[in-house]
Length: 184
Image 1: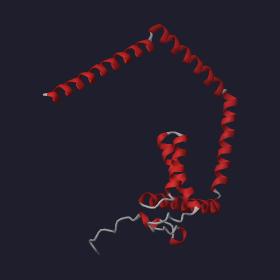
Image 2: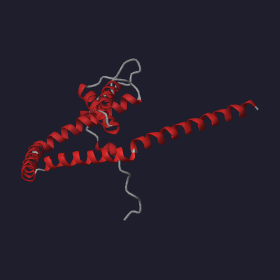
Image 3: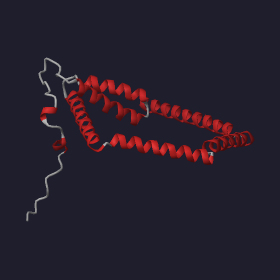
Image 4: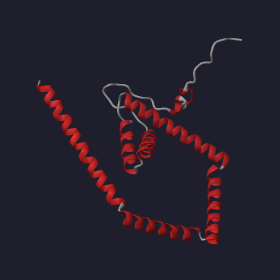
């Protein structure tokens, strides 16, 4: 028995076979020859990643377009975008194979349909939606009355304005002190 540790995990061993991967053109005189599916894969990954992190579909769309454009460029950024695009394409193909074998989408649709039917039945029986609307309206009205009675929004605004003025004065003072110390 050997005391040697196992070899480190290599994520590259999970990458698609060479036949599924673009042959990147590293010629400095021209742009790489990129498959449209690779550009699309890069766009999807870039768009979803940025859109999810930023919480913005518009930023996600812009990032997706940028990732697709980057995939056409030479250099490290382009190499990363193309590799990401190839990985997305390979992942999509594998997901399609799994779905064809196990009918995942069909089963998911059936399950979602069943859940929706059950939720409609519960809502009809217990008037959940109607009660939520009524309680939300009551909560809003009570919050509004409380604010009118105690002037919470006015006091909050006054405090924020005072805090902003204080910070502005402190920043101006620090700036003046810095100018005066640099003159000496």
